[in-house]
Image (tube, rainbow, N blue to C red; front, side, top):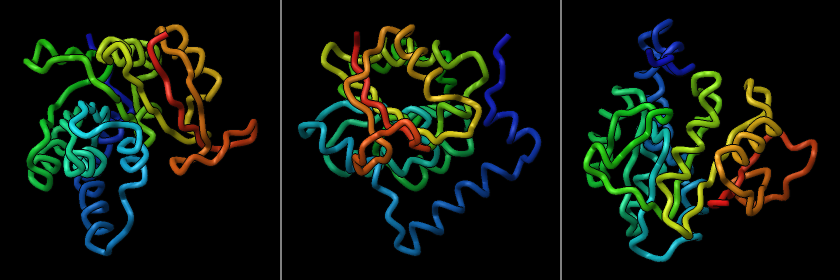
Length: 201
């Protein structure tokens, strides 16, 4: 039996949480907030027309920017409310409901072989405990030979950076580089955020 993610547990305790989350980002976008910092980094890594998997895409802000920049985007999120919002607000990319711990896009008719997998928004800290290495293994399986996974999340959320890096190694992913922000500030031992660029080891 599948273990619900921490996000799903949060929603089960507060069924309005997903709707609040969608409205939060709609309001920020309407107010002119810069919501594309992660996406700009990913775009800079890619030639036009690359294939991008937005893993834990939420209501689609990262994937939508990348689609607008000319990339082929597939977004996956476990929350159907967030996927519904992504489809409504950002038509164009392929938005799918799915658990990252069971990620198998070819069975849904979507080819693997992504140039980049982006996993932003603290998604790794909302997974079901104990599934992190499996999620990373599935990321690796969906990358093309030269592909990279770019994963960012904050400290103090129950998933230590050291554990993440160990899980990445277990999953067959090598750390190319790491930063403390999405605008490429250096990572240090006391950094409270990590952005890791991983490739197939």
